[in-house]
Length: 406
Image 1 (cartoon, rainbow, N blue to C red):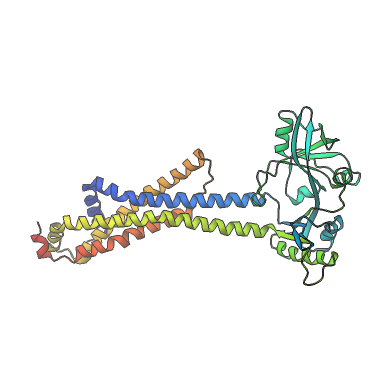
Image 2 (image 1 turned 90 degrees about the horizontal axis):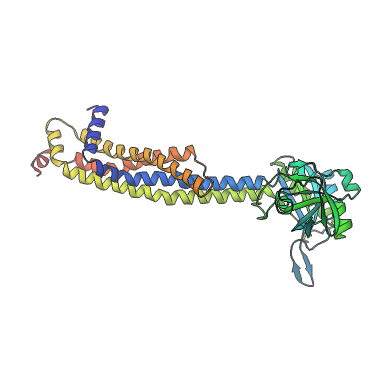
């Protein structure tokens, strides 16, 4: 018997019990749909985290003031005062893998404009900071190196500051007061949102020349941080080692002694986040995959019932010349048709569920072609695996006993 004939017979057999066939497929539909939706949810979350990390900047490395041991007591990161402006200059000049470096000092102040005020972080830095962070301006322009050299009272603000301090007013050219000093707003940064690496609102910041902050507000001569951009992602690891060696030498740190600074590579953060996302995606897919197993067991159960109900039919087919292979193929194809139909409907169910999660709950979901193909192949494998035993049982029936079956 050719394959097409067997397929037609299997289709007619399933069509005779439409409700039972639909209920049998339901487990596969839910399983395939759940796998596609859950994998999409996991990959969407993974991509969102990676984009948030990427929004921090290109090939970014953080160099920060380290901890201090005072009288046997360890004081946390940022306690040392050994990181200075000269270190930022030396990193740019002496580390071959570094593209640019921006010194940073910071404080928090109440900002006043007209009758409104807002408490935020004031960052003192240099113009290359915006290149290191890959952070363009939505309006205006960044302050210049001349502003840094003259300690000018100019400021670039983030979107959160703009919304809370200016509302509908155009901030460009407006004067705000920081620590009782007037500052002219020269630029507004493009919105970046929350930082995945730090967990803070990147837009809730104001940036002014570092000389202005240190001479007129903080009175500091040291830095809290240096942001470094490596030439490429691959160079970031070499840059990390070069920076560490350079700063240990500049700070005269002896071998075996702890660093008075820390160097953190954002590529490491991205890699850890990527691994965590992959584990979460696999976990979600595994949980959803249980539904496929349950659906396969349902197919086996119904096929066993079908063999029992059609015992006499099997006997008649064998009596008129059907071989064991023909009978086995018939029932095996019925199981595969059930699982494939369930898989096809399950794809639509999974994509529909993903769209609902995206539109209703505002969750990011990434539908993967690989996940769809894997779910379909797995559903076919489920049909073959769980359909084989009932098909084999049908093929091994004694034709004489089968004809006598009532």
